[in-house]
Length: 90
Image (cartoon, rainbow, N blue to C red; front, side):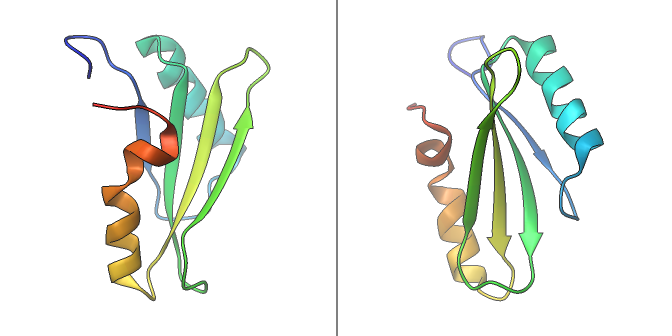
């Protein structure tokens, strides 16, 4: 939040996001009037955080963040830097 305005919508998933998860995130972003949203999911195989960005048909930025559950220190570090990944400052 910036004042009383939301600046970001995040949705945690237990699996790799599919089309319905992206649709849901897009609906949340439109409802809250934000231009950036993220789906945060576990990655059981890779030791580092993966980040994938894309834009919706109407120009909203969606980010998939895969946290390495085999390296919890790295996952925690990535969450602490979430504001850098999504591109806003407090």
